[in-house]
Image 1 (tube, rainbow over the protein chains, first blue to last red):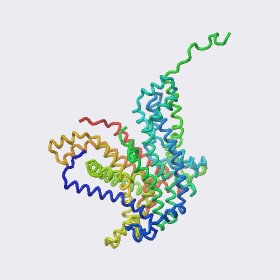
Image 2 (tube, rainbow over the protein chains, first blue to last red; image 1 turned 135 degrees about the vertical axis):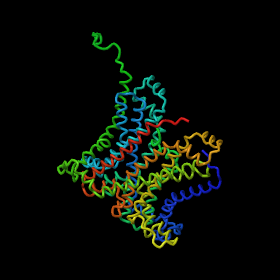
Image 3 (cartoon, rainbow over the protein chains, first blue to last red; image 1 turned 90 degrees about the horizontal axis):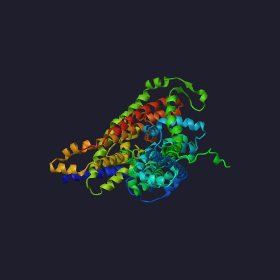
Image 4 (tube, each protein chain N blue to C red; image 1 turned 60 degrees about the vertical axis):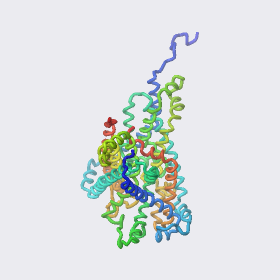
Length: 276
Length: 310
């Protein structure tokens, strides 16, 4: 799609793109550079490159913000929740796309309704439920909540499974596979594409989720990374160097993942917003 | 004399219909998912509605008292509630408009064969993968009135009294809007890019042959064909504006003096800090109704839209 040919206006627009690039990238770059400066330099000489490159901020942030523990907590929560979500989405998507059974449409739209309201709406009753189950300050409460947030995953996997040719499944059935074998041996291996898409979407969502860990986790040792960052800011807000280091440590995993899997990230996060 | 010869058993094995076999498999496969979804996602929504009609401090069920719609009456007369709602609405009015137009503009620009277009797009999308907590904290520091990056820069440029940004009740909300746009425009832009790519090149070639100028091309070709994408972008942005919680909580906690309080934060503080579970639930129900309505509109548009024939 190339139609803006005039040269002078092109340079003008190009300049705009550069300005936007600067506005987007500079805060992050500043954060990374500041994390390598001693605290006093962050505030007095914010624009200069670090004169004494130091990793002290990182070790301070790691111990003071208890980042190691937070990293572990976030990782555990994300890995377990993601596994459950992917499994449920795969099973659901396949079922709605390839199987025929009474109540199919009703159950599908019933499940899809979960996408229509944000999680903040149901956080109060969920807290009550978890409290009564004695699961406050227990990762299990988060697992249960996240396992229930599968509407989007089911929706995408169903669209994905529609593209899988039914003949292959039919062939498996004729060969004597039970329905479960058809699912387990034929459908799942073909699901990789769709699973990548929702895996990335849910990874970003889970890793960065704030409101649920905020509500369900009570002790510092259970903090996820966002919570650890908040605690760090509340207690040590005047230590800019370690603060920037903590923020950098928190952002680097998603950013690095993103730059390696850019295409899949973009596909994952825009999927479902477009038709089908 | 075997049991078989008694003629009591079927001669041929019972054949289950394909539909029966499929149904069994289907229900089994759906069971795990639904057994999570129903109690922890669907029922809580009904739960909020019920909770909004009680007065309760939480914890022990004994203190729960049915009060019908009294919480809603209290909401309607609560100035802070209307303030919060108005803040959400201001967000929608300003952020959705700016974000949509801005991301559409960038999408069109970057669809051209500019050098490094792919690189630009990659960078623009990066804020989407960052946590709102990281973004909120980072910008809290950048915008810090005394030592922040922005104000230091402004002072170097000669400004005597740079604004207090998040500390100024009059502009704090707009600062939050700017940060929100910073984070979200990349995603909207990519949605527009996808929409633009579905416009066949022949249309542009035909327009060039007809001698159409840039503006004509924009209004007659691009605008009508990305209307669908624009709707999606606007609705997603609108819902995002009502979902606002993380950024406010991290950057201003609703302050200064409630200048940035939004529905979700008010609901949260009322319920968990002041123990007014029924009241908070009523706010949650309002939030639910609003977002449900918007989502319903989106679903309606999506099911109605067909491929445009040219």
